[in-house]
Image (cartoon, rainbow, N blue to C red; front, side):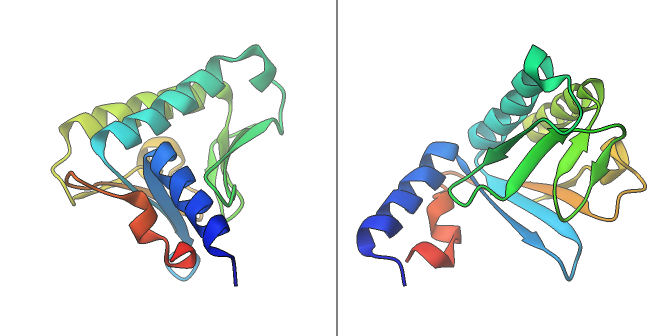
Amino acid sequence: MPSEKVNEATRSEWRELGFYYDRDDSLKCWRIFGTREGLLSLAQSIREYAAAPSSQKVSEHIHFGPYMYLEVGTWTHPEITDHWIAGPVEALALLSEAMAAAVESAEPSAPIHLRQVFAPGAPYELTLTVEPSPYDPARADPGCW
């Protein structure tokens, strides 16, 4: 069991990130919950990753969150798997634009499904949910309480 100091650090990382994520393998879905600002920050991070010259090479990637298991990377084709959300950088840039547009117009608590937009044949779904403010992403993580 983590110490309270570790738990507080984890809560702080979720709050700095601005969103909470988990992967539900029974539903085959990455689920990301956050404020509009937090989810727009995720879209911006993916946009910046796609624009970076260092991201051009296949298998390059970035990790998000205190546990670092949400991975976005460069791959030969768009895919959403239990491992990552990946594709050519051009496709990732389009995903970030679709994410931002959907988040901007989403009603709170209504799920945004992105598999069809990014990787229709992928085994996993990617779902974003704009949570009403105030939202504390750390509260969603049972492991840090």
